Length: 266
Image 1 (cartoon, helix red, strand yellow):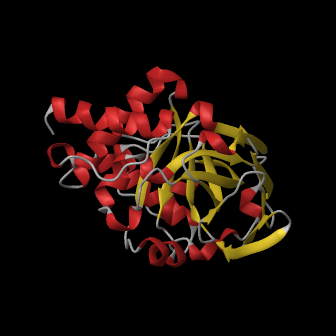
Image 2 (cartoon, one colour):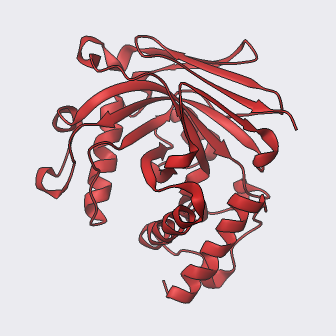
């Protein structure tokens, strides 16, 4: 994309994030035409928001890795986005509901890397990425509906905006994850103490490490690498749930523990 058009789109996305401006649609001149341009625009947005206080990208989310989420969003392929350091909470998170356009939550398994996943090891599969996994954890992805009607927008416009991401809550790390049958672990999400959905590790492309391998290969294709110390959210086991002011969210994943998020009332 032309640098001027990238700058125009980044400014629009900035307003959505920091001023709660909902997007109807991007001008045609700065709408990405393919996944390469969408990720190019996402990279520029990541740099801009880091400069504006969101923090550097310290982790990554991957959306549409489960059947439930592909059917919900009507998108049949994984999509990744960055997660900014200053939007990451450990075990318990709280933010004002009014800081979002329309916040929601997802129930996920996350991994933290203890080694790089770069071009030397590509192409990756679930077995070859396992040695790079330092720990696994339960996680809540915080998403935000920054769009007038996302169902009428193309996937590329959503992808360039980190695919709805607005932060996350990471549970306590479990370094002895090899003792667990990851694909059989059950996760459940509750809001205000009421169960709103459940799923299993196998729902995420057969195994969460298949998702990690997909992202590592995608990064290599884009001339990048996943780095030691970064974390990856592997996709929601439960359909996205949109939250009201005052809602308290908890997820629990067998063997990985819990994570909690509260959207404080105004």
